[in-house]
Length: 192
Image (cartoon, rainbow, N blue to C red):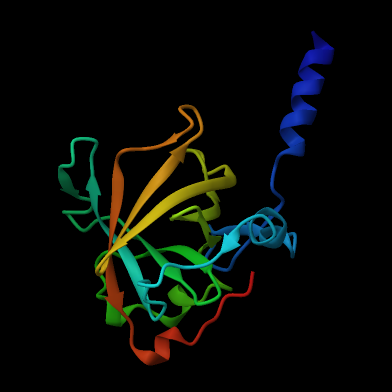
C-alpha cells in the first residue's frame, strides 16, 4: 500500500509544470525557456487565422450554452473579464481586465505580457485552429496545459475547451468581442 502511494506521488509530481509568478501576483508561466517550443512549436503548424486582428484584444462578454442560448457573463459588472491577445508570431496572452474599465482606459501594465497573463501558442491542426495554454486547469488554480479550439466570425472569437474526460471539445462556448486598442498600447511583443 505504501509503495502504491509513493508511486502515485512520484508520477503526479513528475507531470507538474515548473512555473514562476509574474508581477500581477496571480499569473504563473513556465520556467523552462523552451517550454512552448517543445510542447507546441516543434509539434504543430504554429499559425494564426487570417482574420485575427493582432492589434486588438478579444474580451469575453458572453457564454453560449449547449442549447445555443447566449448569456451575459458579467451583467452586474462586479467581476473581472477574461481577455485574449494573439500576437503575429502566434504567441497568446490570456489575461484578466477589470469589467468596469473601458478598453481605451486599460493600463499599459495590464497589457504587458511580461508582467501579467497566462501564456499560450496558437496553432493549426487540419483545418481547425487551437490555442495551447499553460493556465489554471481546475477550481484550485492548479497550473497545467489546456487546449481551446478557436473560431473567428467577423469581430467575434469563439472558444471551446477540450474536456479530457470525454475526449471531446465542449459544446458550450465563450464568446469574445474584439476591442481595438490605441497604438501606444500595442507596443508589447511576446516571445515564448
